Length: 184
Image 1 (spheres, rainbow, N blue to C red):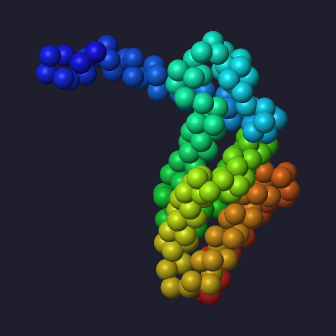
Image 2: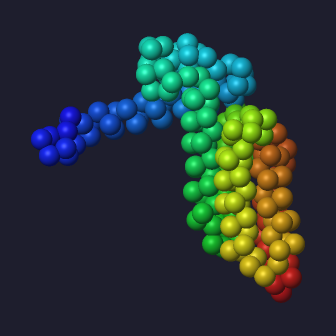
Image 3: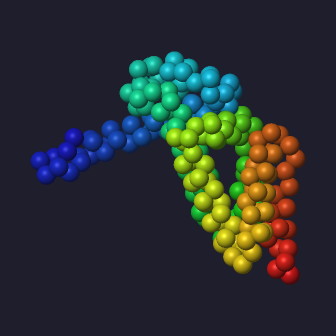
């Protein structure tokens, strides 16, 4: 609750932290449900059961199931974009792709399912664009003078991360070789 000067009190900060934690728990529960059964598996009751909260908590923190799906997509994208923003050497990008390939398959499938949802819905296109911009920026930091190889690098990252989600063999070293080609 704000004090007389309008500043948040420790009590308000505690409630805000608990609310933020609950929102994250609901997003993580949604991600698990999407991984197990697709977007169609997400309902107020299913998310509540997965998160171990009363069903009313879902709509207290998110106005609808669709808003929860959008929040989950945004959270997933935020995590991976933060990783892309930290890429300064080829090894950073290799590590990112290796981490993608090592994550639980159900999580990888869930993330791609959410990106496919964004591909189908024009109102979510901005999330795909955010990913593309971050990936292009990372590629530009690694290959500043070669637009063709930057495009190949971005395509390779997208392809390798999808391969990991599908359970296919992934060779992240391909990215290091692509960055090194022509620099020798």
